[in-house]
Length: 114
Length: 113
Image 1 (cartoon, each protein chain N blue to C red):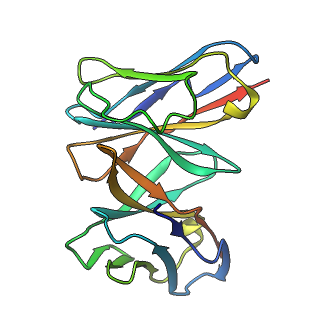
Image 2 (cartoon, chains in turn red, purple):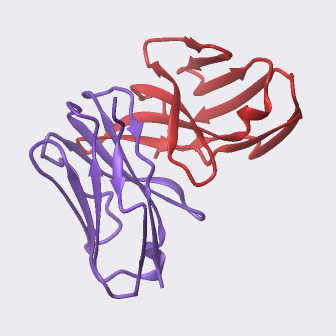
Image 3 (tube, each protein chain N blue to C red):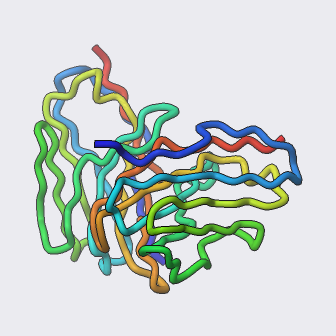
């Protein structure tokens, strides 16, 4: 059974720091990995998608890497801002029983203090 | 363009009543997904549609849950005889095709009293 782990569960940092968020998964048979952001009471916003054949994706201040063989992904946030405060979720895409689905970690709550 | 929309945004119901949740995917997206987010369980997968077909319904928590999709577009998730443990946020997502990025709607918050 695929398990996705995000550690730590919460992080509080001062504005301007560069951050690394970690995600690990137990089964390398994935077809992609997505990083999401969730603001309180809201749905999920897709930040970055990495296909299984890719190693890295970048969008603005965000960079995500994927190492399938070791079951790890990292999300790098450069020069953090208070507006980055949210819960960040990692999810791996896999097929099971004919269905495609995402399996999510429990998320990491980030607080960036001005 | 318009994103994934869900209705209602909030639903409060009494234990034992039936509820119907609606999802309108992004136009042209062939894949549609339902997930549930609760405090104790995190985000869990419920069901996947490719077109109007759901290959595997084993992710639905019990036989009180059913889902359908019509015209390759709108989907409804129905919960019969609701229980308090059904209280959660129900999220819908759509994707342009297989093995692609999923885009989520704002969710329906269901509260069963």
